Length: 77
Image (tube, rainbow, N blue to C red; front, side, top):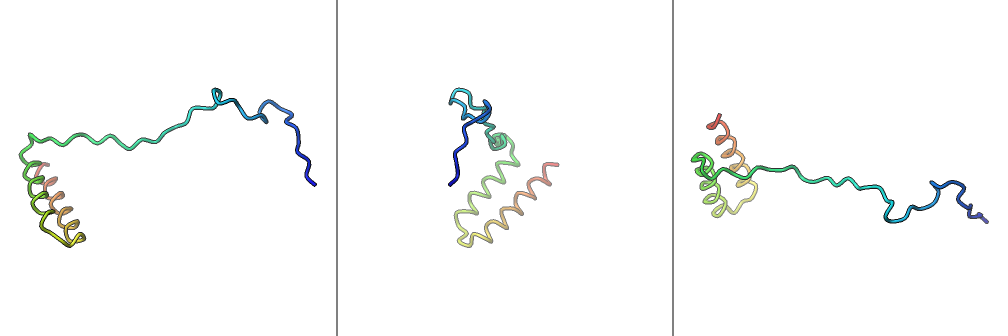
């Protein structure tokens, strides 16, 4: 039979709730709001909206959306 040991040190005692250490909460990165005044972004956004509604194949839609986004980024450099 295993004997339960009595706590010998203060660190062996469970702290009160008010004494618990602060938890570090990982928040998602802050993403800036899209610039709706940028004509290049609006052209990409409109094409994305029109395109994503009509395409049934999700994999194809994802691939073409990535190509559109890369083209948009290259045009803005």
